[in-house]
Image (cartoon, rainbow, N blue to C red; front, top):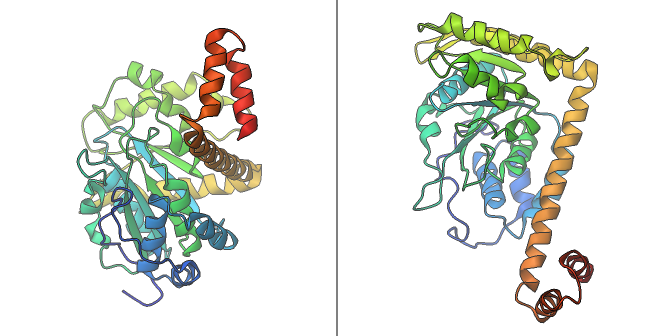
Length: 341
C-alpha cells in the first residue's frame, strides 16, 4: 500500500453497536489521515458512523468542507444477477482509467453477530493489494431499501478521502426496495436471462429507477429476449418517456474473472449520463434531494431518541389517561407532547 493511497480494509465490518473498544477519538487526526488516503483512518471513521458514535456530529462537521466531488454509482438488482462480479469489473476498468475508487458493499446481516456476512469482499479479492481502492462491507442490520442506515455518512467519508468514484452495491433487492436511487448519481439496474419474465419485470418498480440497464451474463440463452422485454417495458411510458428526460440505455455484459466484455460500454453510458445530469440540472436536483433526505432522517432519529426519554414518563402517562377518559384526543395529546420536547 502506498502512503497516499487507499487500500482494501481488512477489519471485521459492522460489528454490533457497543462491541468495539471505547478508546478516545481524535477526530481531526482521523480526518487528516483520511484526506491523505490512510486506509486505517478511513476505516475508523466509517466504524464511528456505523456505531452512531457520540463523535459523529464532530466527524460530519469536519468532513463537510471536503465532500461533494465524488461520482456516486449505485448497482442494484435481484440476487444472483452478478452485482459483485460486475462491481469488480467496474473497479478494474476505473482503475485502468486512473480513478481512485471506493466501494460500499451492503451485505445481509448475520442473525447471530449482527455484522455483515462479508460475501462481497470475498469476491473482490482481486483488488486486495491495490492502494487506489477502498472496499467496505456494511451490514444492512434489517434496514429496508437494500442499504444500511449508515450508508449516506459512509459515502461522505469516502468522498472526503479523495475517491473519484464511489460504487454502492445493494443487498439483492425486490420490487420496492429502491433506496439506492435517492443516493446515487447514476443507478445501474442489473438483470440476467432467466431471472423472470416480462410480466414480472413490468410490475417491478425497480425498473423505474434505472439510469442504465445492464443485462449481465449476456452469453446465456435468453439474453436477446431479456433485452426485448426491457425495450418493451420502456416503450410503455413512465417517467423515462417525458420530454427532455434521460432514456435508459440497455447494455450487455459478461462480467467474469477472465473477461469483462461490455464493461467499457457501461462506463461510456455512465459518462454520458453524468454529462446529461450536469447539462440538465438534474444532478444538482438529485444531490439536493439526497441532502434533504439525509437531514430528515437525522431529525427523525433525534426525535425518536427524545421520545424514548419521555416514554413511561409521568407527562406521557397523564396525557394517556386524558385520552382514555375522553378529556382530549390522541392528536391533541401528541401535539402537546411534541411541544414539551
